Amino acid sequence: MSLPNPNIDARFIVEVQNVKEVTLAAEADLTYWQARLHSTAVYPFSSQGKAELVISATELHSMGRRTNELTIGLVVCERAAADSPDALFLVHAFNSSRLFAWIERTFFSTPYYPGHIRVGDRVPAQIQLEDRAGMIISIQMNASAKPLVSREELWQGKIYLPRRKADSHHPGKYFVAKLGGRTKVYPYSPETDTLQVFARNEHPVFQWLLESNLAGKEWRIRSNAVHARSKSFQSR
Image (cartoon, rainbow, N blue to C red):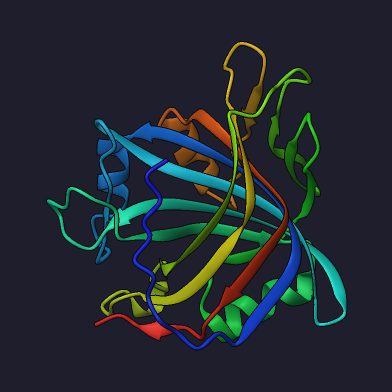
């Protein structure tokens, strides 16, 4: 996974320790995501002709409450012909707390919505998202998976946000995030792991994942991560 690492300085307004985090690094059709982002100020990074996505589920304690989150991000460049990634683009996100999802949308301009999220950081790891209509996404590791590597990682950089429809003539916003901790990397096995996505009219991102032929590449698990974020800034 070609995760950018610009180490941008920022003042963090929220920092959470002891986060459980399970991430599936995936690939999808590059031309599809180029068309999907054509009206934004960023461009999907090309990794050997494929777009790179990250689907990440977390369990954390913040503001005295335990919540789960699920985010769908796209690795992006700030220049059309860039040969290295610059940032992430937050395509869509969910929080198990309806209140926290509202706070994120209202005060930080992030695309958060309520959902029931399960995250399992022990082998076999899992990520699941449901709404009142049933399962939306289910990703399950096989029980015999063995880690390829275990190492300390720390990433700090920009996360760009979708434009609001009412402000479509303005550049989107971004915030700076810090994500890190002891990371175990596992191979994704298309033969024994499962990746199921179900379309939802109210959340078209899942139709986009299906149409762009999403495919898993590797698992990344942190059982004691740190997550921090800055306020949201207006892109220039």
